[in-house]
Length: 284
Image 1 (cartoon, rainbow, N blue to C red):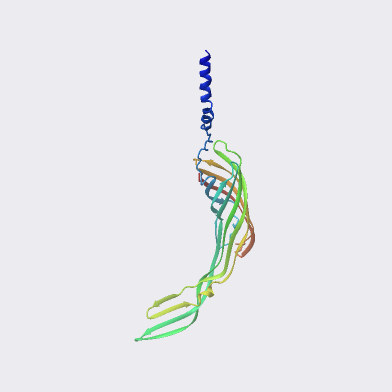
Image 2: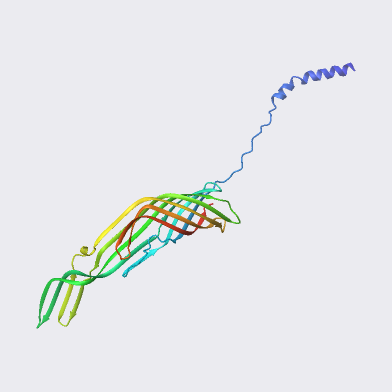
């Protein structure tokens, strides 16, 4: 019994020096955090394109009483294209370029045009030529033309979506470019040549610049702003139909129209009450 104990102690004494060596060779496990899942970046996320057409039902250029001989052509249509960005589910911004309604009118009447008349008479194999100043009847007119464009930065609040319909309200500010031109007393002079028997008569108008009449025109940039409301209906994942009302004001824009006897009237300040229909295309 004593011998077995002595052998056990001797064996322990032999193994004890090896224990630190074995412990020194043991490396603890290394824990590595799991890498996050890869999420692709959507380059077009939040951006959309838009375009629309509008109808101005107040017709700001309309002439209340059209005098005899005056023709008036007003286009109440407008159009715009642009792009926008969804900042979140309720707020978005847009930048648009638009063509606003146009107008033109004219009145025509009889007048006279100056020129040179040359008469050639052939008789007995010889030709005699007579030339000198002359006057011919011609058509004269007064006319006016108005055009306007705008660039608008707008903000909109979407009021939630109900059965696919998203109502919204919004407004914007921007710059309008407007032009008008009025020509008074312009004459339409035409050269002519007639031959009767042996006599040829040629009429040539004087310098055409003298037939332009008196013109007055102006081009200007001015402040513009809009207010509006409407709704969008989502027809597919990326496409929505937009229907709304928009009030557009150009307080300083100048334009020309005519009074009830056809005389020009120059006014300041334009506004349009428009119904607009368009499409939005989301780029994501």
